[in-house]
Amino acid sequence: MTNAAHSSSPAANPIPMRVGMTAPEAFPAAEMAEAAGRAILDIGKNFAFYPGDLGHPGLREVLARREADREGVDVDPDEVALTNGSMQAVTLVGRVLMEQPGDIVITEETTYSGTLGAYRGLGYRLVGVPTDEQGMDIGELRRTLGSLAADGRKPRFIYTLPTYHNPTGAVMPRERRLEMIEAAREFEVLLVEDNCYADVHYDDAPQPPQSLYSLAAGEGVVYIGSLSKILGAGVRIGYFLARQPLQQRFLDRRFDAGQSTLSSSIVAELLRGRLPAQIERNNAALLPKRDALLAALQGELGGICTWRKPAGAMFLWVGLPDEVDREALFALSERRGLDYGHGAAYHASGDDVPFLRLAYACPSVDRIRDGVALLAGCLRELAPHRF
Ligand SMILES: Cc1ncc(COP(=O)(O)O)c(C=O)c1O
Image: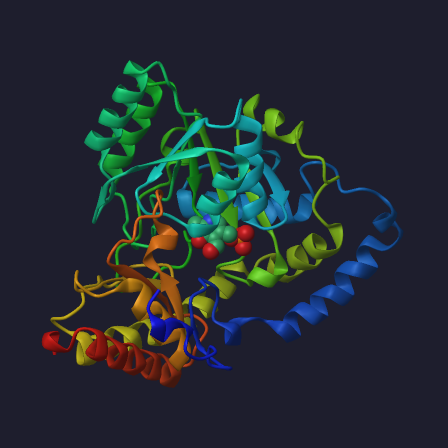
């Protein structure tokens, strides 16, 4: 940290570009209120019962349809288990698959900071595999698996984000997905696919390939999904898909008595038959924000920083000039009122990589422009010779 980092308190109302979420204005509050009235009366005295390990059947049907429609495969609602946000699925999988602290999980070299924190917290050792613009490098994955095997070590699982990778936005092509499945099978390692951004898609890009789970017909893959990125993170509904007997291994170790019937029955009532419309509404709200961010970056930082236009999800992974002091930049931006994701938070080993993540769902277009101008001002101070 520089001295500047400690010289004043953070701005009171920072421009919120840290968290990957939905566009707040796309939340269907009135529709949700109406759905709540109907759903609660419909369940009535049955709220007296526990929901069971899989959770509300109506919502599981809606989610099975969501997956089946996108993936073009049949999905049995009984493959779907509801969780309290997808983070509960991420942590449940980690807890169940761990044999002892120090066990290894393989991830992309950079990945979702929440997962890194959860798995570190459980006691896993995280091994990051290099990526390129098409996601995890399968040659590197094989080398990593091979050298671990040579040491007599087998990772508990591979946690991966092949579609709209967080934070890079990479989409893994179909061929590479098949290679990944093959490598995992050869080394007998389970794949845990986090697909929570699957439906946050922009129409100016091709649709992503099928999920690993679909391509592998569920064999050797646990699949994690969420409503946080298409409806709202505050709703706290996620889910996982797994085939038997794997699913039962996870259910046997969930001790929370199931996911809330109150929230799942309301959301089922809200989304039944209108989930595609909700996805459309959210994506339509995100598109002008993405484009405003791209234009502002080009105008302020073109030729100085790097980024790629994302085909889905709601953030940009921005490459910084190597010599910029990342701690100083983060502290200065925070003090001046911009909240973004610090690159090191997304690195499997916590390395101070020359990147930052800008999430664009929450702020208005004007605030996005202000945020980029603020960031550019900070960079101008820290790397004046670049401008
Ligand atoms: C890749 C990934 N997985 C899981 C989550 C957690 O989402 P949820 O709100 O469903 O717990 C996030 C949230 O940002 C994420 O980016």
